[in-house]
Length: 243
Image (cartoon, rainbow, N blue to C red; front, side, top):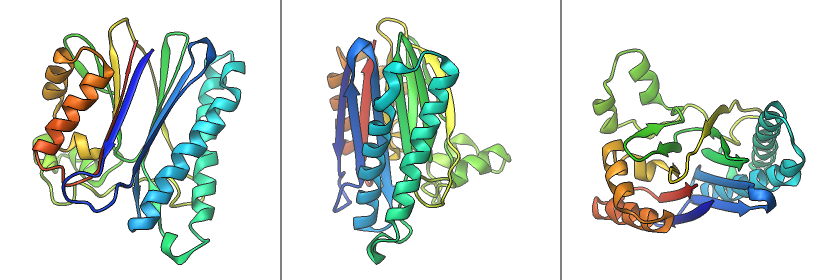
């Protein structure tokens, strides 16, 4: 599995509150996690760094021992719960951390299959040769408005409250994560990103950039350049996995 990740604070923000980790294990196992923090300058950064590290550590401890798909799902959700509990408790250590939290999107690859988990509005996309499919579903106010028919998808892209999320890791003692499974064929890619990218680049443009990129590093760099050229008002983080 080829991998690459890239993060940038963008053109407006003073600090980067996004974090990502990629852990390559033996026997072809891989864990990639991306988090977009919130809750003040210091709190958001701490939340995203903690969550990414805690999820990856907990996930890799037993990944190679797990044999069944059901056990894998249980362990992924347990890793989310582990990270959530510690980030939540950490928020009481210092007034600067009060109310901090983070999104999380992660991919666990093993034996040719990929499991994806998400909380918040950081996304996972499956990029094939001729199509792009969003795997995750945003936990956000605008997504709820779209579901109710109050907004179109195009209106949501420029809605003034598009950055309000309805679910985050570390904000409450418990959190519910969404879980997905997919299979990557040779040459296909999985892209994880924060909303700093997805707010600026649509699926057609992801497909175009992917078709022109020779490998995950080239795709990450071309997408980052595109986001920065378009103003990048938020932090931008991109992780690409390719089979």
